[in-house]
Length: 183
Image (cartoon, rainbow, N blue to C red; front, side, top):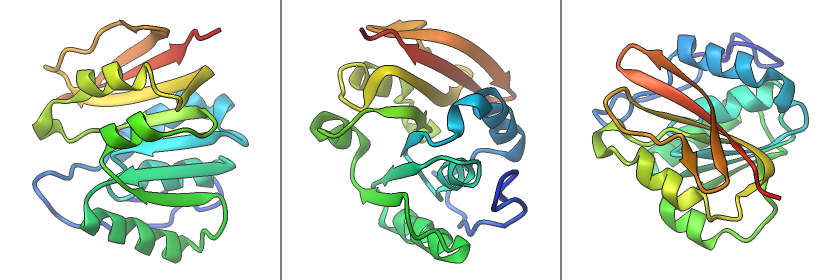
């Protein structure tokens, strides 16, 4: 696992093997970030189910101003902090050890420009997270949401003010992009 582009290009990220961890592949990550390139500069980014911080650190590398990585696994939080130290990221990054659904329900800060959601495939909870996020204050009037899921998992085209922008298949997974239509 490596950073593909930006100021940390080529740096390898630490990871660990576990049956429930399936980091976003470089092919998928490159496609996602190419699509979002014009939205990254100075963006506020939320990375839900952050895992190793793979998407978080790619966003920072490509110019995001602030990233909050939310992860409940203590081992994953340790890996994220190790990657933060390895890359010497000292500002604009924070790890929150929390259950994602609780975080979404309790969040009271400013909304995010970009939201990455990569729930564990074994739990098939992409639709549940989208239902929860639509009413959360993490979403603003111009937010873009990217969610990964298995290709067999049902993801709607609309969740309240969130409208499907695009959907791409990558083998056994699909990536869906939503934009907020909040007034």
